[in-house]
Image (cartoon, rainbow over all chains, first blue to last red; front, side, top):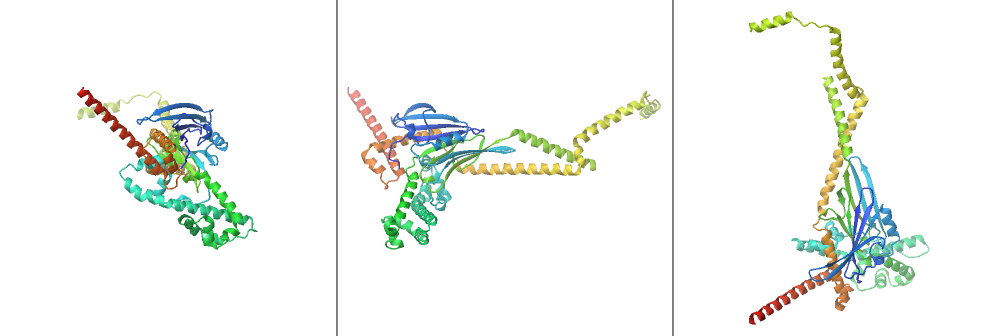
Length: 330
Length: 159
């Protein structure tokens, strides 16, 4: 959990059929102080900014800052991501827009991509489809689902197993990332004398021991791979541990935010969650981009009416010709 | 009946005199051939075997393409149903407002600030706890307020 007070952020992308994007960032805070340089997503004072406040039934005041900017293409957004130094500085992100002409329809695809932090196990390897649905679901929606009639069943059959498996996935991913790095380093430097095979064989045991026992990584490695194993490879292992730790920190210290996307035409597919107005919502947080690249995508289509008419006329013309010919023969 | 036969006989005997028979015949023939020539011009391609087959194949392919494309779109849209949830932008913002308030309560309370950094309490549990606490607080304030109002009403009655 982020232990500092920071505005909550909602990013709204209104995607147009020409690839231009109206990006709106809504920041909510308990104070009327917004540091745009420290926002979860790139935004600055050149955006069109409006401020508002709200007093709840309980008498609490919250302040809202809305920043709006029109981008001609995703390149504008990607430039901002490339130069971003805010509260998620090492999170590698990019946006992508694709338009495909499919004669009867034109299809659009908008993607917001976040690079994975470490080379661990993808969540798909550990969780069931139903669990994954809740794994990626924004907190707000999980909370709403848990207020529905089947909440007990969801809690018992999905949320609790998900929480149980979560730690194992996290630990296994970290161990995999470390062993992967050791393997890469040794492959690149054959003069380093370290038994990688045994490390790979004991990967599962190392992960379990790190999770279940109170021992630190030094003692876990020594107990599983032989006394003195850590000491004899300490330089390499220490370097790799701190490197993985640094990479892991990208996800661990990530400040979450929500993305909402409005697509042109009719929505036909997405991996996000669809609201009452047909907008798609995702939540970007550390877990979802820990060990696998996180692509938030939505696809929509627009009907090319002229193509339908042209095709209809053509087919009708050919059919009439063929019928007349058949009648002539008869 | 006899009358009718008689009229027919008369008509046959008195055939109309056509002044320019050839011209009339030519006109009628021209009219007929012009119509069929226009049709031939429009659908002449049906006489060319390779063109007829190509256009027929193209039509079938286009119809199949259209059907497949529409089926694919419909099946993808059907799958979207699973991802539909009842919420909207206003609800998200409402949640965010509640979230920042709860977060602020945690950070400004010494006791809960310690919990916020503890790995033994999950974020959701902590947030739920604070939310419940805030709800209880509101209810408590309402009860106190109603009691105060009742008290003032009793005092008024006594006076």
